[in-house]
Length: 196
Image 1 (spheres, rainbow, N blue to C red):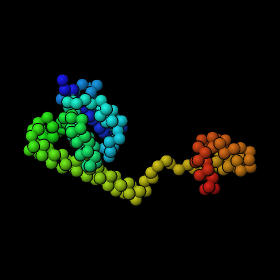
Image 2: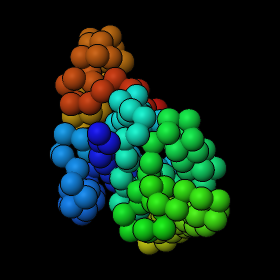
Image 3: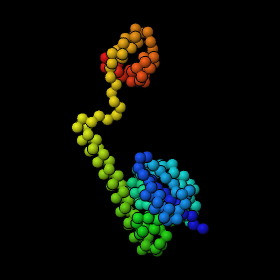
Image 4: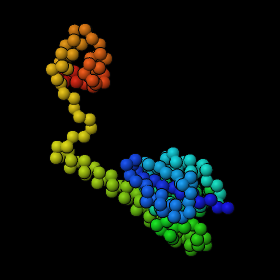
């Protein structure tokens, strides 16, 4: 009997995968047969995806909500699709794109049409990833222009820090003790003493 397996992916831990999980369950997939990764689709080095591949059996059916949930790298999507369908002999169903259902139209024309759609959607997924990165870079640049600071806030050189620095300089305390007294790590301590 064919087992239904679902794969879901979101790019960040903060993103919500509920919509994908609901869509997969509506296909009759048990929650125990749904694999979820919370990381970028730039490649396929994802723990749950790799686990899923190792647990799939011939004639299983893999469901994904949309092609960009599989990945966002054009060449790797095509490579993975072929690996799953041709080498592992597992059908794939893309829920939001019914033409990408390898259970249907197994003749030459059906395969040709689904291949064309797959190539187009895979390209669109990678282009969207490129656009997202471009928009992020533009947003960061605009924020920097407005004076927004990124990273950790800069530690102040306080009078207490200066006193601790003098104790350290006079070999009354070690660098570790000085950093601990100022509630900071040793690397931060060494960075700040260069600014005095």
